[in-house]
Image 1 (cartoon, rainbow, N blue to C red):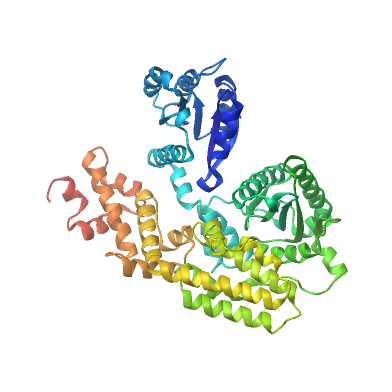
Image 2: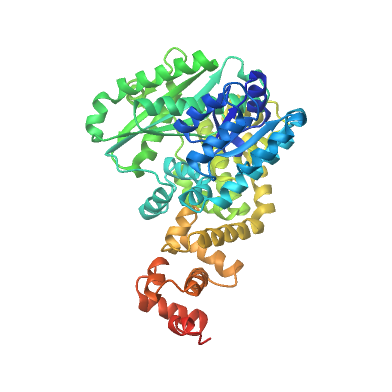
Length: 534
């Protein structure tokens, strides 16, 4: 996620810019505001923002001076500056351009459209300029929540796929035990707010929740929908030892966080704490237990542990979606409307066969909702559009009062998903191949395997191989070799590198194998190519 700093000596301008766009939707976090360049410079040193929107004229230190000092200290790449100016300040814009500002905006002409366009240009510049690991992060960022949805619901095909994806997302799972929590945010006045303002309120609250939880203990925090979230707390102690102190510790942490959110945003939450597990792939079990505990969390006891459930009831209140994982994964992966329909129809039949199990049916419908929001492109917006004619939106699922109503809600949701899948089926496959080809070109110096690249994009190796065979002239391995040899020719043409050095730079296991691939692609050996025999 990109970091944005807003610098202006007028508080109304600061507030206006913060509220003008849905920053979270643009993958941008507003990390703070400053009233002059001096305060801004300190924040830039401490937090390293990617983008700074600054007024050009301010007391103490002007925006112009701020930009000049940043360029002297940090070079021309970061942060990217957008300057705010008045009509009479255009003589200063010319000087600002010499400091390589990305864009300027006239305050009187500032609209959400002009601001969005300027931000788009900045993000495009950042994407072009950064060829370091940030490029990879930008590509895999949308897969962060997909990864955790797979983990929570036991949807990984194998441990290898889990390890490859966690590595590519730079996620650390070398702890000795894990505890999952599942919760729901609520606000006294939130329901009366427009959906856009609800989203802004709960996005901000979630960011604070994540930061506060991390101060107590390392954890992964992520949203499931606009109001539901999950936390995975990581421990260096073994699961048996964690069990001894986990309940009291996590209860206190979560209650403190809830009180802080209530103080600052008038938002609180209910939360269930799962059991401690000793392996990352067992987090799905802790998640199941946390959802059972959540069902018993009430306003007078907002945080409940799974052990409390065992004392109060022996019945299971959560629905294990992983029982359908193979079909659901394949349906979302391939936009297969028929397979999705068959799978959801089976789930609905299961619900109807147990009309007294309302809580489990509601939990199952919510789990399918969370899965869809996470796995669909622009999931929150897409699913919200499905229910745009309903005043409660997709949250209308929580207004259902019996199993039959849950099934009716889920059947409608199924129709909308199937219609979407039918429209995107072919285009989506082409889109995957295009993005994979882009990824390969941008990581051509690395050792790229079918398993690793498939893991980055959250799809199975077999499926990726099939897509390349159908939607690309070259197969997966052939395409990688062609890209690597194209880059090899460029490096050899520069004349400063030996053949074995180029082979090593491009991730080939040996010079011999490099020469073999080079000759297969180009028809001659790399030595003959260097000597001009082509």
